[in-house]
Length: 166
Image (tube, rainbow, N blue to C red):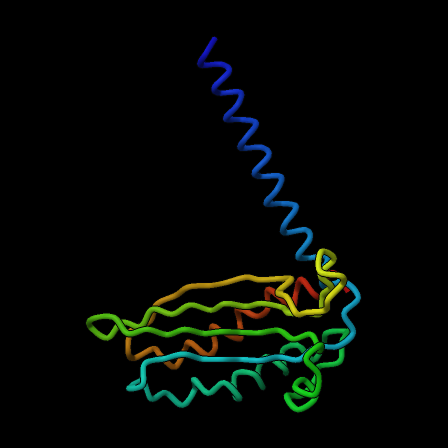
C-alpha cells in the first residue's frame, strides 16, 4: 500500500511538473502574438586568438535579417532599435570556447525581449525576455567557419514560431 501511494504521488508530481513546463512554453509562444516591429542584435564571445572572418556579428545579423524578411513585421535597423529602450528585439548570443586538440565547443542563446509592466511594482515598465531557446555544438579548428551558418539556421526556430503565431 505504501508503494502504491508513493508511486501515485510520484506520478502526480511528474504530471504537474510536465503541465507547468507546457504552460511556460505556451506562455512564451503567445507572447509573440501581435508584435508589429522588432530589431535583431547579435553578440559573439570568442577566444582572442580565434581570427575567423565569418564570425562577424554584423554579417551574421545581416543574414538573419535576410532570413526574416518574409515575416509579417517591420525589422528595425540598429539605429532605430537603439532610439528607444522599449523597442522589442531578438537577441542572439554566441559563446565560442577553445578546448584541447583544436576543438571549439560553442553555444547559441536566443531570446526575444519586449516591454513589460511589473504589476507588483505599480506597473513600472521594463524589458524582459519573453521567449528563449538555445543550442550547443562543437566543431574542429578546420570547421570554425561553419558556426556562422549554424547560428543563422538556429534562428529559424524563432522565425517559424513567429510566423505560425502571426
